Length: 279
Length: 244
Ligand SMILES: Nc1ncnc2c1ncn2[C@@H]1O[C@H](COP(=O)(O)OP(=O)(O)OP(=O)(O)O)[C@@H](O)[C@H]1O
Ligand SMILES: [Mg+2]
Image (cartoon, rainbow over all chains, first blue to last red; front, side, top):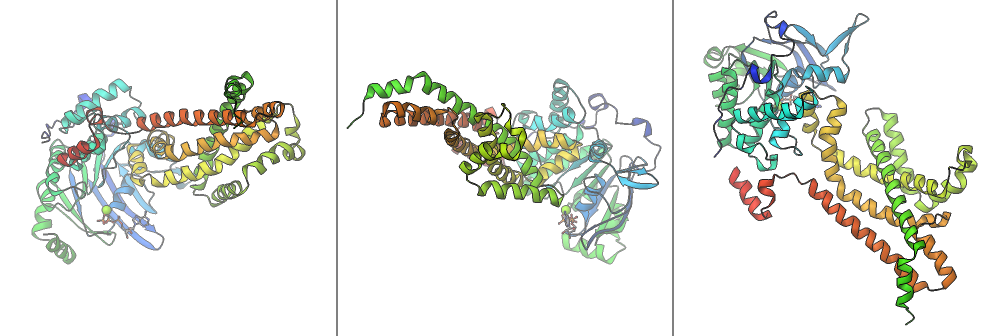
């Protein structure tokens, strides 16, 4: 009953050039994590996570519950400070600044600016219930990018149509299915023109019949060259779309390989066990 | 039965009475406004990551929920000027004293309402707003506040009605609000039944008007689109299940 996505999601004419476009291509990775460490009390959740994502690549992240996948994404999105390690966006270290020879966490206002360059999609959508679908997509443009209401409305309307929800733009989230909500959430992140999109199990909260419509939008996004990190249990999606697949276990990356290798000939015993379990 | 309708209607329409109503409304609105503002601050302090601030907020709520409003009102009016010279000035009218006392009393209750409201908002809301790149002030005003208002309208409306009735306490510090005017008129006429009935009618009307305003407010915070707003609750439920 919902229209299929019509595509054409990344459109410089609509979204404008990426922020700080001048840096494009100078760094090897768009997003890089170097030895990220994070603990909650005595619980060491990230024990030195290192990986990089090339421009336009899709990195799928697999791993058992509690292995630290969501924590890693929150740290990459600067939603939580790391205890040690670096997050680099297009080669530039983000989240911290040097002060008197020491590294200090940036104040929340400055962090906010840096966050706006990274798109995040949550397992439970986290749409704003007091806004319509259109309002949800507009709010980043008006409140963060400083666009006028009229501009924002036009951009948001177009993006909502491109994720296949033109007819639902004026609906509130109680009136949208889970799949539709997640597509709105993707549109909300996309209009910010992020340099990279992070997805935290974007289809795990959906009824099985609604998974396809969300994956279709994400596949289209990958095809158009968005750089993506996708935590998922959808092995099919990882095989089809990912350029590399990561296996996380106990707060560390134990395997990082192209899908054919990852699924065909996993090096690590834990990966093999995990793949058997999810199949 | 000794009830003279003519005296009753005279009371209802007497200018002194209506002036008392005006002061009652004014005091209710002003004290409530200050009370809500202070209550929000106390609620935010209670959620502060810094323990001493949380302790201050907790102490405030503890003290002001314990002290009877009348005791605190008399303290502010009679004791405060002795304690703090700044309150000896001409500006410190009975209206100012009542505003301060009732607002501080209300703040303790409003803070608890706001705290409950803040706890009821899913942490994912703040997370999504921050992820978009909103600075903390925008996260609060554009995402948290609208949801906070919605869940706190019913309990705060209750507080508003309580406040309207609490303003009658200010008659003891000779503020010429509705009850004080009633008592003055009663003292010269001894028509207790007619005058107190008229006062009761006024409170009833004021609360009724406010209930209409509350209903209107709540309607503004129902987040459904025009397409579905017109249909009945039952067909809406059907529509939602059909959507899934
Ligand atoms: N805010 C927090 N405070 C304390 N502990 C936390 C917090 N967030 C996560 N943890 C702990 O960190 C560990 C990793 O959690 P995380 O949510 O990152 O795992 P995950 O790989 O995303 O799991 P799942 O597949 O269930 O989503 C868990 O032990 C969890 O209890
Ligand atoms: Mg998770």
